[in-house]
Structures are given as C-alpha cells and as structure tokens.
Length: 183
Image (cartoon, rainbow, N blue to C red; front, side, top):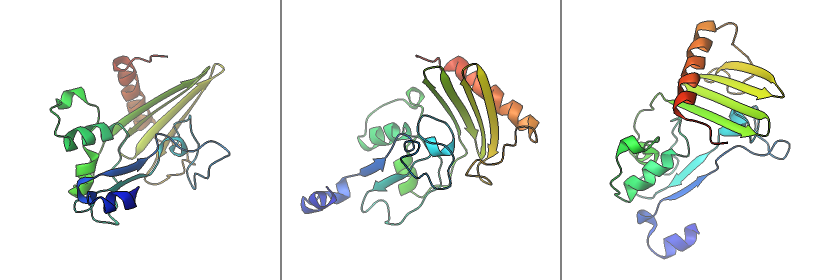
C-alpha cells in the first residue's frame, strides 16, 4: 500500500494510520510487560501502538508519549478534511497535528467501560494515575496504579493512596452519570 501511494505521487498528501482499538487476545498475544488483554481495562487491554505516516509533515522516527484514544482520530480526520465540526460535539482532539507540530503532551482524563455477559470493567486515567474496577459474578475487585512508575500494573496502591482512590472513583461516578451504558 505504501509503495502504491509513493508510485502515485501522493505520499505528501496522504496520511496513513495504523492502530488497533484494543490489546491482543488473552493467551494468543504477547503484551510484553503490560498486564491484561482484550476485553479488560488493564494496560494490556487498552494500550496499543498508534503509527502515523505523513511525509513532509511528520518526521520519520518521531515519538510522542501523548496519551490518546482512537476517538482522537475522528477529530484528526475531520481537521484534515477541513470539516466544520464544533469541538463541543467531539470527545477527542486532533492527535495527528499534535504529533506533526511536536506539541507538548497534555494531561488527560480518559474513561473506559466494557461489559461482556455479567462481567463489567471500568477504568479512569487522570494523568499518570489509573483506577480500575471489575465486577463479575457479584464480586468486585479494585486497583489503583501509578502508570508512570508501574506500567505493568503490578503494585496496587488502592490502600496506600486513599485520597487519590476516592478522587478517581468520584470522577468515574460523574462520568457514569453523563455517559449512560447502552448495553
């Protein structure tokens, strides 16, 4: 595909995006140091590569640590298409131009909810702090991680960081009020 784009002479006018919407299947994929897999909200289930190729705009080898979500690509593609969409109508931001312009990373709050049968996963990330909750068969488990210090989510800080836990749980409750589950 990249060779065809080059051959057609449209590489500088073509943005190629490679991304997945979730981590690999449990037992079938190697998530490296990340805990969890697809259908969960540990990093192994939600952290995926985002590769963008845009010659003349993004220098090869550019690396960004900006936390983002696939819905950010909606804002990016609409911006590239010069569509007139009010920002209040989108949850995301223009990640492609953020990377192209090498802007400073933004601190973001991101939320997840995934329901499969009687199992539901939730998570909220605020900066480097991440709260995870799972309910299954009437049992609830909770975790709190400092992702900057523990990307593999091995040290549950729920008890040691009570005020952070309370703050993130409150953010999740507020989000749940605003974003109703559809299934």
